Length: 325
Image (cartoon, rainbow, N blue to C red):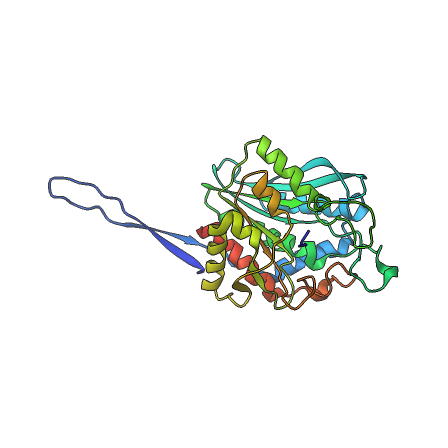
C-alpha cells in the first residue's frame, strides 16, 4: 500500500399543469438535511479498534474486531456479512481474507461505495531499531481512522433517502505487503490483497456504484489531503466534487487543491477490476521521505496520532457527498 457544503440543501421541484387559463400549480419544496458528523463518536470507534490490539490477519484481535465491525454495521441498519476469500502473501504463504460488507438500502439501484482497510501491519519495518521490525503495528491512523469515520457515517444513514443505497466495505489484508527488510522476490501485488479479491467478486456479480470513496490515514493532526494521481486518472470528476465540497464546508486547509503522490492502494482494484470510479482520500506529507507521518509503519501509530478535527473534516465531507451528491 501507499508506495510509490453546506449543511443542508433545498431542492426545488416544480409541478406544472396546463389548462385553458394556463394556470401553474403551487411549487413544492423538499429539503435534504445532512446529518451532523460527530467527531467524538468517530474517535471512539477508532480507539475501540486499537483497543483490540494489532488487527493482523488470522490473529485473535483480528477475529474479535471483525465481529465488532460487522455487528456495528448491522446495529446501524445495514445488511452485513463477511466476504471470505484466499490470498497469497509476498512470501508465497496463503492467507485467509475477511472483508466486511454493509449494505444500506440494498433495494436501491442508485448506489455509493465507501471503503477503508481494517487490518493493521504485521511489521514495524519503518522503525530505526531493527529489534522492533517484527512488532505488529496498532494502526490507529493507518487503518482504524478510515474505519472509524465510516462507522460514524453509517450511524447517520438512517435518514438517507430510500432511493439511494450505500455500500460500506472494510477491506482486509491491505497492509501485509513485503517488509523493507525482506530480501526475496516480490511484486506490488503483495499489497491490497483483500480489495483485489472483493473487486473480482463485485465484477462477477455485476455490482455497480456511481462512485467510490476510499479513506486511508485520515485522522492525523493537521493532515493534508492532496489529489492523488490515480484518483484523478480514473475519477477526476469525483475528485473535484469531493474537494469542492470540502472547500465549501471550510475544510480547504485539509483538502489541498494540488496534485499529490501516485499510490498503490485499495482504490486501484476498484477502478481497474470492478470498473467503479473510486478516489483515495489519503494523507500526503511533502516533508516526509515516504510522504506519510513519521509514525507510519512504526510502533508509534497509536491514538496520539488521531485528532478529532481531522476526523470531523473528512467525515463531514463524506456525509455531504452521500446526501447531496
